[in-house]
Length: 287
Image 1 (tube, rainbow, N blue to C red):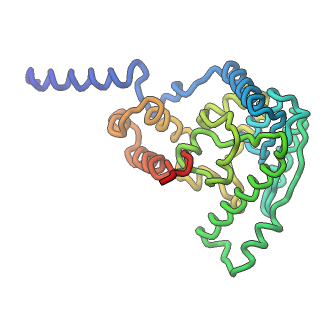
Image 2 (spheres, rainbow, N blue to C red):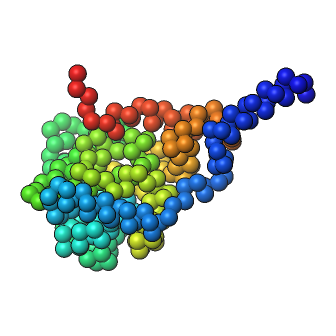
Image 3 (tube, helix red, strand yellow):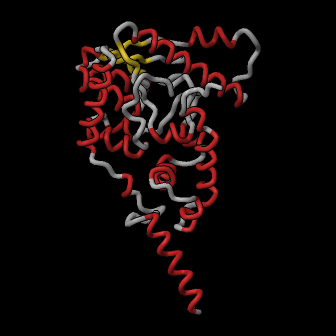
């Protein structure tokens, strides 16, 4: 190798190391995502308590789907404000599963918060009945899923009046990917889990005592029968979390991740999803 080539390679390696630090991006190493679950849990409990008191309110309302994200949110709220000041709302559509209902009730029993079931089938179906629709059409399915999400959030806000806050349940992975409904499930007064990647949220869930069957089950918004998040996204949360961590938190370039062994197609897809969904993560722009 020539002296010039050697010096160039040395400079490139030095530049990459100066940017990556001691944490080297590695698609087979999820350890950078590890958190101190006990410390994070305490911080988030204080966050909910402080923000509720600052708003001079006393209650929390949480949409409890039976999944791990809302399970963590409602557990944290119960610890922060006392279960007597937490209302969980299970808002099933006609194809919501019995398992989701059972898991929501299991959480209510374990963390002692009040759980109410408020079905949304009648109002959602009434809206779509005004024009013929084909529920097998993917675009119609997404429209219906968005309508469900906004209907659920409307109920949560209604039930939060006059002295409660709506607690968000969207994790950092979903928020960055834009995998959620604007003014639907992404809407909230405060979000204690929004800076936790899905992988990290699962760790915290186990620490909080969320039943493992809830933590480990395939994530789904139950937008239609058989729907799962990862099937719809086309990749796993574990793969996405690691890429997002290095790309967003550590500000590594896509080219650096690809050079480190991350799948080029997946890196590009995730980067584009983050870019295209930016508008969902900011307040509406005013001209």
